[in-house]
Length: 328
Ligand SMILES: Nc1ncnc2c1ncn2[C@@H]1O[C@H](COP(=O)(O)OP(=O)(O)O)[C@@H](O)[C@H]1O
Ligand SMILES: [Mg+2]
Image (tube, rainbow, N blue to C red; front, side, top):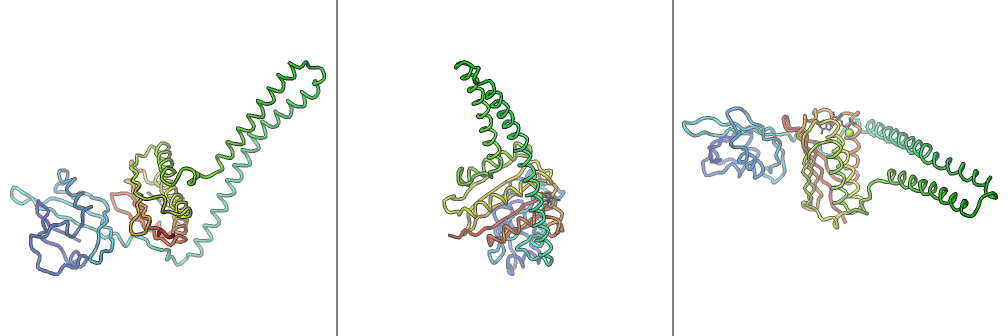
């Protein structure tokens, strides 16, 4: 879609594609404000960046707007100024990136993907089991062995010790037992996933995102506009895992400096958006049978009857948009 506008953002010209998008078939005249078409989000971006916009295309990233039927669409937009005497006009070029957007799982080779997913889950479980086993063996095994030696030594000399010496020995042994308890607690804590029930969904997310930012050195903005009380436990677990997987991908692949995470409730849906400003995802990758993280995300979303979309704006990083219905 291409839109020409004057410097106060009034419409001069809109191309056929734009007219189709917005059901615009009248003769076009100046009284129309550009925001009538491209919506507030994109208009705001243009105003915010107006000083930085030159005669070269300036990326505004991907924005959400609504078409003539009120359906949301996503446009990856570039804007530039064109000189007109002392003033200038704006030329806005928007690429519809909906075609890069993925709704439900429609892959032909879904079966293959599913099998790959189960294999991966099994592999992860195997790794996890090994880790726990090693931890129990190394840490718990060690303190228990020390405790055993202590007690058998104590048993051997027990009859020869004074009451005070027995007391000292017992204090020593209690120390070992306390260490053992600490070790058990530590292992148990690592095994246990974050308890959303304990912290509440919002605080669990806050905690996770903060921790993510600390470990990855990626800045973040977190917007939480949902009412935890309306969300079922299943739903918050799904949401939590999806955010986890998305942020792990941002840290692993995106090279982003910043990520925006927003969680809102709109029209009986929990809407989650994770937008990074990194290198962006290559389009075919979201359909690849090797993208097991993404397949896992799609599976989770499908189970919750939701939708997931990946927007791959060219200079603007990756934006993951998830809608999950809030059912009672
Ligand atoms: N935020 C992102 N930015 C850039 N590339 C990404 C992002 N998220 C995912 N990708 C790309 O998509 C691929 C598939 O992701 P995923 O299925 O989670 O697999 P994995 O993380 O195990 O590589 C990644 O290997 C990466 O190339
Ligand atoms: Mg991944």
